[in-house]
Length: 368
Image (cartoon, rainbow, N blue to C red; front, side, top):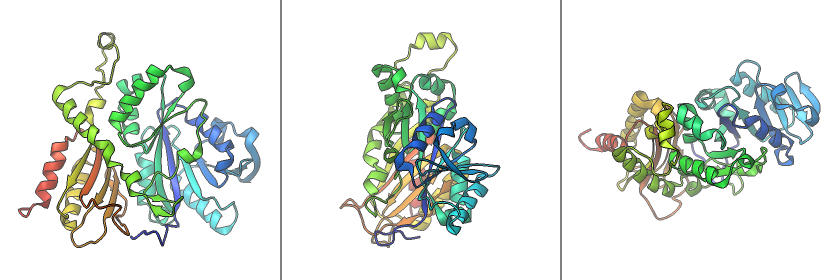
């Protein structure tokens, strides 16, 4: 699959909003649905009732689709998400509903975004008309720290995000916000962190998180890969493994241990780091390595993005995976700069950087 500046992909971008229960997804959606910049967006939610759309309604397009005063189209999922997305596109194609240019999916009640991502990346009909743009994760600054201490899910949601939204910032002071920002930065070094109060955020800040930038009609590799953010993440991961504690987390440890909480235990499992290779890679061996990694450690390979110098190719190949599923590789039109090294950024759970490095070496070596 080739996507170049001359032939921009026609597939519609899909953004997924995820976040722990009570983290402000519905408040965010209410604001977005009323925003004039959302006019060409189809929003897929579980229930109209939860979102309180009454004051925004213009007309019902069909039983499960309503047109809002902002021009935004709101669709409720009845049953299967695959069916809802196929039906939306079919109606758009037939002219029965406005020709939306973007889809936003809210994962109400689903703590793990992985099933939705798998749907978007695996269903052959959906992959021909939609492309995953990014994952937007909401984190409640008031309760986020304790939720991440107690549960793995919010930690994982933060780790896989392309955009991190700190909600309820009007209810917390600056030191508390800075503390949770520092923690999120260790979990996910590259994702922009946006502070939100009452759900207010510019829609443009949430979208265009993928490799293709529709604003410039080009592939924005540096913004997408952002590997420089992972240098610190790598040293932190190594530090963390050796010393077994966190430097940025200033909870009252005595208080937490007294209450039986193993502080930061979930963060201890997450690593964010970058692997580079100077020599061009053998594509078949690299694919064999990815196959092995996804087959044996798929659920723990939270996120992987790479810009690869493949032997025999004049231009780089971009690869992108979420857990055990990978997007089709994209042969880019040209290198973004003079640096020809292969760079792979990873966010993993319970997989040490050394394990990744050594297994990749083994697969790429002649002995393999």
